[in-house]
Amino acid sequence: MSLDPLKSTYVYREVHEQPEVLRRLLVEEQPVALALAEAIRKRAVDHVIIAARGTSDNAARYAQYLFGAANRLPVGLAAPSLFSIYETPPLFGDALVLGISQSGRSPDIVGVLAEARRQGVLTAAITNEPESDLARTADFVIDLHAGEEKSVAATKTYTAELGAICLLSATLSRNSVQMDILLGAPDFMARTLALQYDIARIAERYRYMSSCVTIGRGFNYATAFELALKLKEMTYTMVEAYSSADFLHGPVALIHGGFPVIVIAPSGKMLPEIKTFIATAKAANAELLAISDDDEILTSARVALPLSPGMPEWLSPLAAIIPGQLFAMYLAGARDLDPDHPRGLQKVTETF
Image (cartoon, rainbow, N blue to C red; front, side):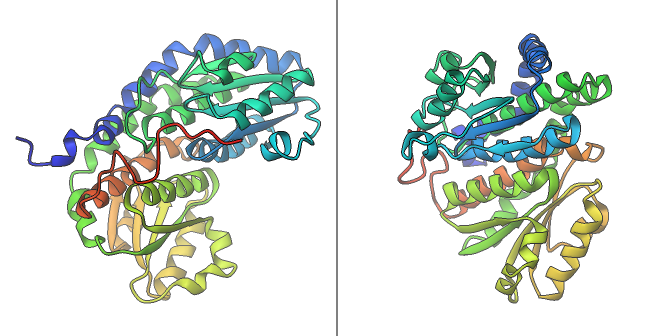
């Protein structure tokens, strides 16, 4: 019998499947990424509009930074209710309209792409269901190849969505160095998983935590939101996500002695700014939990959640979410909750 009862859960298995899922996606979907990139060039696409909900919306936040930084493409997030309820869809112009949905079944996301098709705009879908309504509506479909995800809380489909965004970005930029680094990402993810041997013990400390904040900026702004969502879903904790800059514009007043602040701080251009934020938070007596590969940050934190070193900042969200996924899962276990079946939730949520 396993000494770790959570090893029998779907979410445990799916978290640990992530390196292989990403590896499979990067091999299988290169032809689609090449064809879509060529269509983007041919159509002279000059911006991207993304329709997504929930976890997929957090992947879209990552796309805002990666497509902007690597491809110089502005990215906007669609407001699906303009299409489905207000019935006043905006004009897309020379856009790529991209739908991101694990199930591909939410009517409001499908409706955005359907309107884009009516306007004659290039459309694409990133989904784990290549026969879904969303996939049938899109001109191009990037299949996540994640296999069935049985846990309600998405893990492997989230990082696969990030991987699909990376694949399209690298293909569109024709950057062979970016592509080579991306192909090594599954190994970085596997090494990060191997570092997380003591998260079960760490989670026990926070069994009675009622609220906290998650902080990220730049490429890992998305990670802060996704970690907050996982904690809400699996542990029923009140969690708010912020960029470090936004947090200082008012919410910093929330901090009191022992208030948990979870900071995502991988190496990169954003690290000096995050270190400044950490100093401010610690001066206000925050209890710091740090997801980082930087020794100074890990040493100064009350709780260190280490990342495997060497992953470039633009790619770090694929690994940086992993300690957070495991922390949420083990915190649920510490509270005698079922991390696979959060109350009030179902695997597929259809919104209009």
